[in-house]
Length: 263
Ligand SMILES: Nc1ncnc2c1ncn2[C@@H]1O[C@H](COP(=O)(O)OP(=O)(O)OP(=O)(O)O)[C@@H](O)[C@H]1O
Ligand SMILES: [Mg+2]
Image 1 (tube, protein in one colour):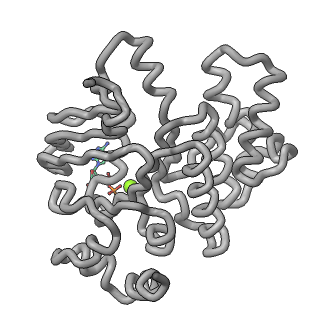
Image 2: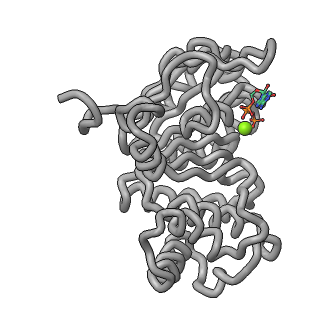
Image 3: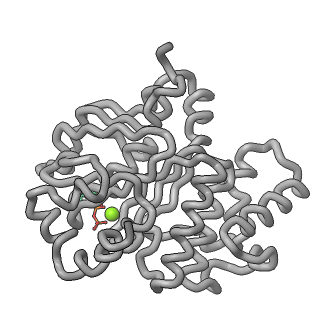
């Protein structure tokens, strides 16, 4: 069978070219991600990681190349079908981005309300359920974003990303600015959601502890391409200046020491 069958990639990027004026960010970039993978997308600052996530969800379009989600090109089908495809992923942006004028509950309810299928009562129950998934209390629904700690903002934004029970979750620096305990519980949360919901996850991260703890594969964005897409172990052995700095620098060796010892 062809089309959106079981074997189709969840995310497929082919020959992507991205330019901002004279700045060529991606040049013939390819990447195929299968269901159930937790992919860490790494690369230097300004290498085009966030831009790539934006292409994946159709917020921006590459100058050339093809983006497919769940086996179909992003722009395939009717408007209705494109909207249906959009419901199948959740996004947590780099800046955590909650709507500052809405309280936590309204933020989480936002994508659900857009569906226009749930009653107010059902929405309240769903909000409580989603808050529970990210280890927040029902009464946190009434807090405004400005009243939350950094970790709570990340978790509330994750709850909103999970509102429509996505199959694909895109996370841009989900643990940046969190203390190590909070990062560790964030990682545990994502892993349990992957197990419960069968999520595919693409996360951008500079945090090697997070990367080592949760990713099944590492995609290295360097020289305007996906330089490698492999296990962490294989990635660490690649001979490239970025990989050298990122994985084998001082901080890298410290963060990764335990995966070599652990077995
Ligand atoms: N809307 C835009 N207009 C012009 N240039 C842009 C735009 N968005 C991104 N860029 C440029 O594209 C390049 C990639 O940016 P991007 O935000 O994707 O990097 P990144 O890998 O996410 O970096 P970081 O790790 O710092 O978040 C940068 O040079 C940036 O200046
Ligand atoms: Mg970025």
